[in-house]
Length: 88
Image (cartoon, rainbow, N blue to C red):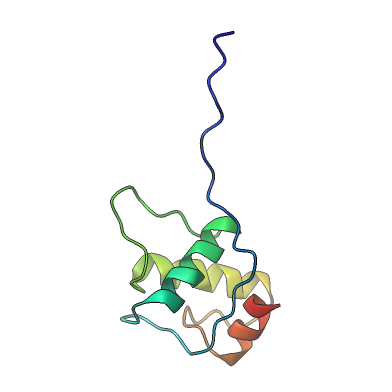
């Protein structure tokens, strides 16, 4: 009684399959999939009102944190090595 429901959490993507390099300025479904993966993994927090799908500064920082956690070069851009780690 009087217990509020737990806040909604973003769904963890069942499978992420990135097929191209991504960097600042990249847009579209691949970027959105990347961002949702990073949110689910705790590397990215999207501020209220910021739309998914555009690779900007927040995504660069989140990718760099992810890369560092995996022992990869923390460039902030998604290259073949980063795609391979995410696509596992």
